[in-house]
Image (cartoon, rainbow, N blue to C red; front, side):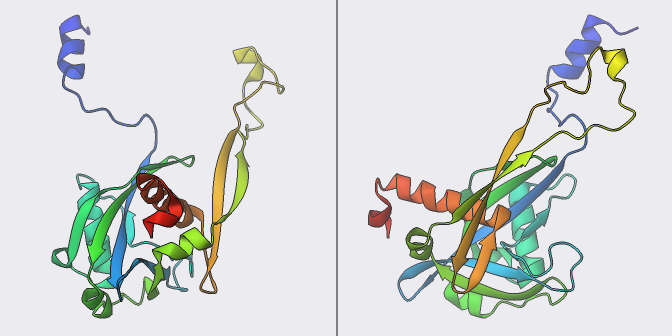
Length: 214
């Protein structure tokens, strides 16, 4: 029999966990200074990969059980582009992206020297190439924003009668923004573009005026 003391013991110092299936990911957003200008480092996923082949992203991946998200971002950077943690000046966390598909994406800002960038060793099974884009490019070329509606799809055997509702029940509808950058003859879109747009906005807001930041 469960008692009040049982409830106190379980929930007093319990670390909250997600209800249901949930996944955690973490990426490093590398900042590289080249010729006095600040750049963001991107990678192109290998075309042979099963998931999102050929797309542009930041170094990162799935957070392993018990792993700190910041440590995950550094580990994935080492595994994907061969830049070790000691070559990354970890500044701190960026904003967190909560996806509608049961995942949380952590972001971390880090500084990598141009020398370390030139010495990167790519994992060919994961990364085809890496490249730099000046930060001000994202100011001068803002993204095209597309909006996606997220609907609830109900199975044919859903027990409407048992619950007391019918097929006209007003399930909640979500909305998801999809930014698309067209820079340097490359298309940066989706989650990577959302993170990029957020970083540019946060940094520009910090200085009161976008054009003053750069």
